[in-house]
Length: 326
Image 1: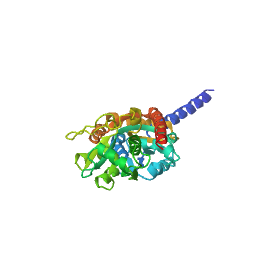
Image 2: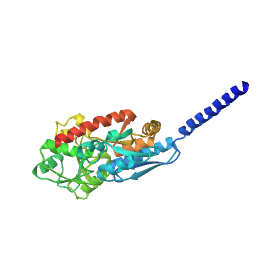
Image 3: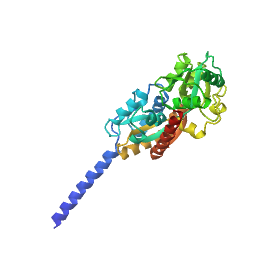
Image 4: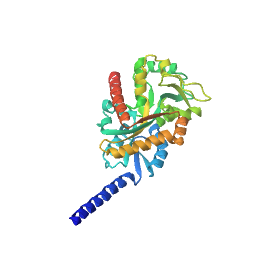
């Protein structure tokens, strides 16, 4: 009888060691480098914002994070690539509010429901840019020009957040159909305008701010309700100064938020750990906040399930917006 009790106790002890060993192994995750796939060219807002946050996340997780740019089809190529990777938590997608437009534009069969949000980290504001030697000196000049003729305007891609802002603006002023020239990112769009390849280039303020400060690019307006201030330069007027009836709700929906997401089937324990890492980087990493301030971005600070809910709402708002705009 004593031998039987001793045997049972030994089996239970071994089982406890095995289970706690399993917990310990889980706690060590991740144990190798993590990859974040950016769906656009290097130098754009999504790329820069992810590179800004990765340092703090690396310190929290204790492993390197590799950033890989994989452009194509407005982000659909990268979305499919990440979707097809093992669901082990080692591959994330660099996310943008441009994905809200996927169902309406048909660029991809994927929607926000195919992914789980880790975090929205950086928020940008769409900006209308033109070259310093452009005949367009003010937003009123652009409005007049767009009402008279169809002009080439650089955008990140058709359906993206800056394209959405442009389409909304054109509709509100009764402009003729413009020619959108996809550049694969907001920064390349700003550069296209700077070089005179297009008359106007749409970007977010963080993608064009250095060119504006260097006086190589003129910002005509921002898609916001208040002026944007850059030290030493005139304020950039808000779009509502020219089109007062654009609702604040719509302006919020088309602002360019960037962040990270996983395939929906990645285990919750990995998603939770990555949420903690993103929160640490956003809330406690001074380097991240310094980069945001220099770029003119705002910390979004939306994580996990709350970010999932916002993505669902944003997709509905943008889908209806694009439907109304035709």
